[in-house]
Image 1: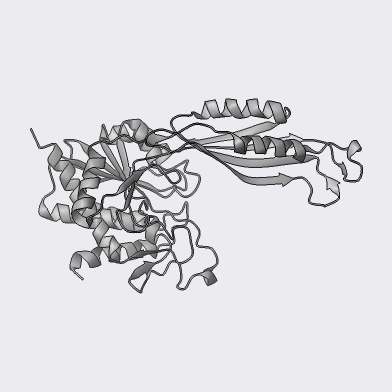
Image 2: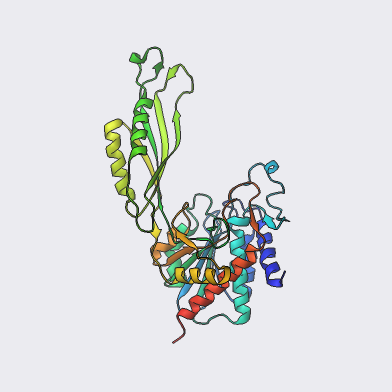
Length: 384
């Protein structure tokens, strides 16, 4: 294994062994800052409360490529479900195991080492390269990129391209890239009734019956047809509760939670209006609490997507599938700034699971992809 391979893997391992369960950073960004400053990056601490945010930028002229990543990870769960400790990075059977191996410490390590090789070789002086790292992506995502995005222009000016290191690949590295994401609208609906004995329903009012009718109608609804780049809006029930669990009591209150992942063919406000209209026919007394956490973004082909697809084809002999599937990502906060957003990272099959892992060979390969993408973008806009 060549030295560059070891460098990428060793940095990934150094990040994994830091137990940065959201919103903790556990020293990841300090480690990365030291390496970034050694390359000539100007680093800015944009932390908010318990959340660590690091912005690093190199270059002061030309178009800007921003890499977005998160150093926080989800909790590992019971240790006995792991073959090796979640924060003790372990190489086994050609794979690297540990919490964050795929989501997304290997991507961060790969981008850092790509920049180190570029710096050693003489990076393009007509391209600005920046990194934005947060420890609040897996948590509420309120004090991370969401909070920092409104002030990025003060440090970076215009952002042309945003490369997000989320684990986009499905079966092998580079087979899938994300060119956008759907919006997310969640709600909790509450319907009140009157509690009573199941043997005397005339003396009670069962809110579950109205809730069931409402939920059935929402499941059956065709919300939209999607767009060329986005699938139709989807609706999923995520929970149903009552104020009693006794089998012989009619509940006095019933609640349900649901989520819609919506395409640009719909809006959050429009979906809320339609749901309220459906509720008026099935449960007029229904009360809603809404959480609109993301709007859809992306889908259009641009210079970044072209560069990513070309590099993957050249280096991996693959034509990647470009889609807008999956959950949300921090790219949703950068796209409104005018940047083209593409997500490229390792295989996502084990993210958020015990024994999360990534193929050892994929980490240096991803670093090579990132390096080639930066070089290709630099060639698109030569100085002068």
